Length: 239
Image 1 (cartoon, one colour):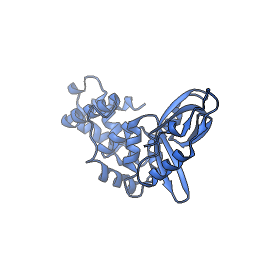
Image 2 (cartoon, rainbow, N blue to C red):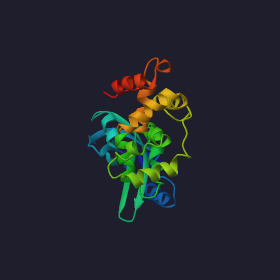
Image 3 (cartoon, helix red, strand yellow):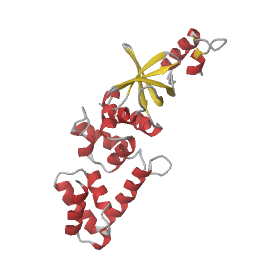
Image 4 (cartoon, rainbow, N blue to C red):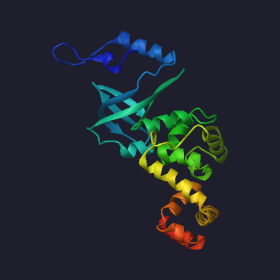
């Protein structure tokens, strides 16, 4: 497979990089055959907006679509960044979507397999929560939290949960520490009657299932409290 370095190689003597057009054309062909053009893009941040950024790679500006979460965590202009990418090729467009972690990229790829969710919708989901938070929301079947994403209505959120909940897990090998904590809370919360009642009460008050379980799970000494006391303490965690 051709690499990006193979397309933009340095010239003899360390001058400006030369472009291997044959390799570039072959990369385009590989995209049409189903292989990704780029695994990642690494270069200097030239510009950042809420939904896209420009990465300067050997004097070539790569315009890459990103989520709002990614934009907020990007290195500053003039600094080096590495984005794991997804290449989208259509008859009228050739787009790159970039993510700071492989986990976010994998969740993006999962989301676009769901009917009714395209790259724009998947970026919207990853703009309101990161990949680990989205994974947990799907496993918790928290349709309310998922439907907060722009362009994602209740029915689409329900379809996302239905199609992906059995394909995801909370194994420590592929999620962050934060999500692992959520996973531990899920088990202990739902196994404790008082905690379960507190979660149900929070959901009835309009909070999402995921944030309700997180808040109840963070209450100190929760095992010794009744549901009423748990609810009061959990509500404090919401603010």
